[in-house]
Image 1 (cartoon, helix red, strand yellow):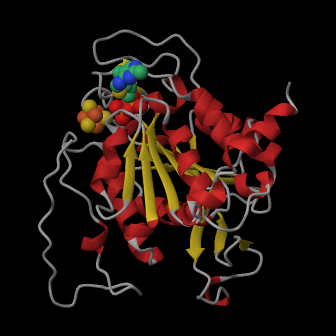
Image 2 (image 1 turned 180 degrees about the vertical axis):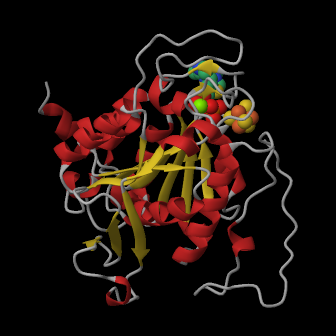
Length: 351
Ligand SMILES: Cc1ncc(C[n+]2csc(CCOP(=O)(O)OP(=O)(O)O)c2C)c(N)n1
Ligand code: SF4
Ligand SMILES: [Mg+2]
């Protein structure tokens, strides 16, 4: 991982957001990923999304596991907090952070190996407890960092660079998240920034666990013609189920809201995701329909993208656990710790 900072050069007339910051303030260090790696396009989309959301970088906590994808947090928001966790264990670390300090915006960037192979249990339980975070999976079907072995998301029949064929059924993060009861489930493509930026913004404002599976081709080990996660394959077969905009709370939604063609879903902070239907019958609030729709298209070899399912009303981890409103980190230790006598009293009940 590089620690070389990008030069901070601002030019006259550069766009500034409501905090008087430019996109430079949302950048990270210089990427050491292979030239053309899909993961770098995701970093670029993240920089734009955070800039447009007017979020102060120091109010963000970034988390990752291990992998080329898990290096992404180094490449955006240098001024944010961040922890590069152990392979597949990022959700536990993010859960701890959010438990004691929910004022920070929480974002995790992981890979298909990190989340669907070694980290599948952690991923499933963070989703189940509806931890408030945006959880991005940069999905390339391989373990890029360790030189291109198949990951759990590789499709049957996919050929690796060295010629071996994958015979095992893939784990699809969208289907998995729908089955596990996820409350925000989306898929994007690293080569489609126009769709990716509003998906990131909506995910950041969702009051629960927002899964964003991003097809992000590995140009070094998985971008050949027999790969189903290559740029060429994804470009030919991706299908937008839904087009969307993200409308922050301050903006009136009437300007772009056309009755009948669009549907507005209100998020907890008053912002809206404006869904414009690409397919007439697609309803992203109907879980079983979303499931069938993704599967039907998958059988035809089509990769469905967009915000595929949303439930904006389900309680997040804090509401489920009935925690206090204050951040635990702001409460003095003496007030938090009940002391040895209180602990002994509690333990008596278990003897
Ligand atoms: C406990 C543990 N097991 C195995 C590894 C070796 N390892 C490092 S990264 C990685 C896979 C990364 O794949 P993915 O999450 O898909 O990221 P990508 O590099 O493809 O972006 C593996 C197996 C490790 N670092 N730690
Ligand atoms: S090996 Fe693949 S995933 Fe890793 S940086 Fe290179 S292109 Fe990206
Ligand atoms: Mg991978």
